[in-house]
Length: 121
Image 1 (cartoon, rainbow, N blue to C red):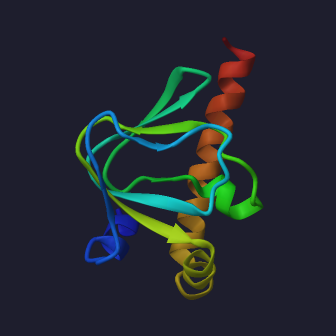
Image 2 (cartoon, rainbow, N blue to C red; image 1 turned 60 degrees about the vertical axis):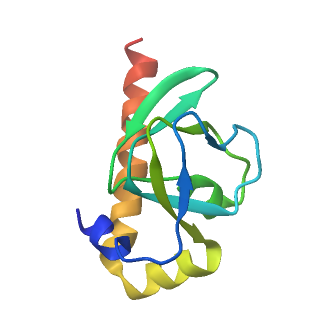
């Protein structure tokens, strides 16, 4: 989990209690997140589509294409999340190639899973 190691000692983090909404579907998004501790549920139209664990990233689509949030994120347990804004994201992409690859890998995995669910409901 190289992503987790990159952010583990970050002093900039947000804490959430179980049940707290991190963001809503359709909201503008100006940050993505790295899960340092806890679990986050991602729901689409009220259906849980993914449970994220420590080291996971989410919210990256809104920061990449400046579009509204495509899903809702909720803390399933007590969570500690590191927010990454556009400026920091751009810096990380330039300075830390494995971070860029990790983001692309996560996006590709999510697209493949959604395509598979669409073809094989």
